[in-house]
Length: 274
Image (cartoon, rainbow, N blue to C red; front, side, top):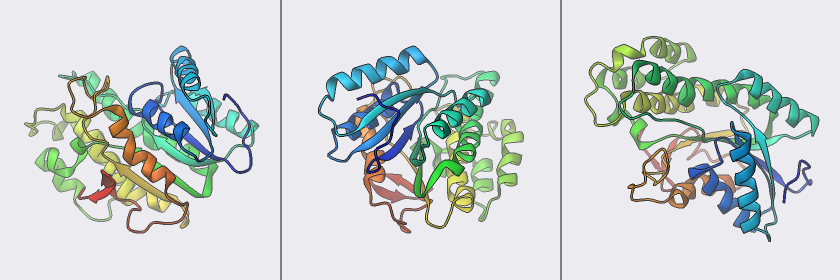
């Protein structure tokens, strides 16, 4: 099943952080699909990434799709450039970019809060902007967010800022630069930096990303639900396969503009309020 070539009929799907959890489950579902895809599983650890490809290949021997691993650390610009060079070398374009890589710390320290904002928002934005030139004319960007990033879950002061219409990239960067002050009035049970990182991602997907894409391209952010993964904890009520349902649904929608879904927040295949 491993391949670096792309038959003309295959759509190329790139999934970040996919050696486990929801990313892994997305690939399982795609491999089981009757559709033929060129799937690129990315992860920062080569041993884990290659092991994931081996495991998936062993259980999906009849798949119509091809599956390849390539190292990609979303926090490392050199790694991003090496990934881009590899795609260019093989003449690959991306039909769907699934931004799945993310982190969450329990009782996060200041340094961990900064790391969360960096990985879940800033690095995701940077990676997406680097890959947009490789996106096909009818390509999709799917950002895995969280219900914890809904504006109802964040601090009131950050909520007030993010609900302002027509937010710009500069507005969001200003919020990132001052993010610590928005933790102060957050009293939720969850790590405030994780909620903030996903809320920033939601706002970026709603207001900024569509302006960076062609009119024929589209983007979504979605809440997969509370799933039993390393990130979500293994007492969660949903499985990783449950969490993979909406991403796969969006991937397999016809490659045409869906105005009712574009730049929206989606859960259980339905649009929900930001």
